[in-house]
Amino acid sequence: MAEKSLITEEMRAAIGKPLDSGEPFPVEKGSIKNLAEAMNHLNPLYLDEAYAKSKGHGAVVAPPMFSTYDLRLDAPLKILELPFEVAAGLHGSDDWEFIRDAHAGDVLTPKGKLLNLVEKDGTRGRMLFITSEITYTNQRGEVVAIYRPTEIIIAK
Amino acid sequence: MKNPLYFEDVVIGQDIPHQVKEPLTTRSVVKWAAAVKDFYEIHYDKDFARLMGMPDIIAHGPYKCALLSRLMIEWIGERGKLHKVLCTHKASNFPGETLVCKGKVKSKYSKDGKHYVECELWVENQDGKVAAPGEALVSLPSRG
Image 1: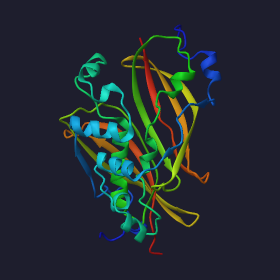
Image 2: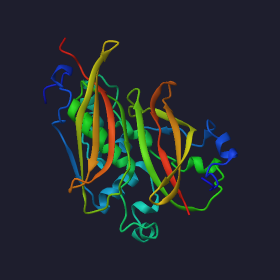
Image 3: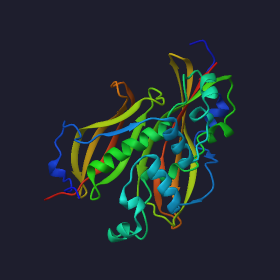
Image 4: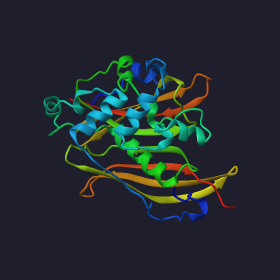
């Protein structure tokens, strides 16, 4: 292909580099309830403290995707200088690994890195696929979840 | 309470005997936006969505993935464990559509004392148009 690549050498060198994926955030009972209601998943483990305790949990459990709270999907664009004009951005895919439960009262710390850059030709033109990896750790330093979202940037 | 689902009950190739159906409304999309603090305008500002080439506001991709996780958690029950879920976003969905989450059992195996089931999952709309195909890995208790 004669066209110039959407991925410059500087961009390629950024693979593996850290991303600003956000500050530590508390897992609050009210936020758990909001998320459970937003996905209409009224699981008593998420909503009823007495029930959660009867099942051996210290507090209500957060739905597995609670970590997505206040997510910065645009973090890679802060460290990448794109050599093309952007026509549109799309959320391409989600990939979650759940290691252990998070509970109300925990504090989660997101730590992101740029995982991969791929270019493709699609029906809407040339596209850049940006995959990042965010590892969420609790206040005891235990990994709770690993999230690998891919954003698609369509070139003008 | 439902009877727990055991590893031995699961047959490779079977449909998951549970579905999640959620009608999409502007309200439901905004509820998700607020719950996760994702305030990208394409999810609540129709004028902005039109500038982006969409006929209306669109549902969040991670919301669809969350509904797939709900499908698995409701199916496997409290004694099961969800380890992985992933999906690719192939089509946008708009208020007025209904999201339907379905799945099939792809394989099952035991490893290091755990009993895993791999599933193929997807989100389709009310007309059967697939919007987000994906996969999940769960583990289940064994009777053995």
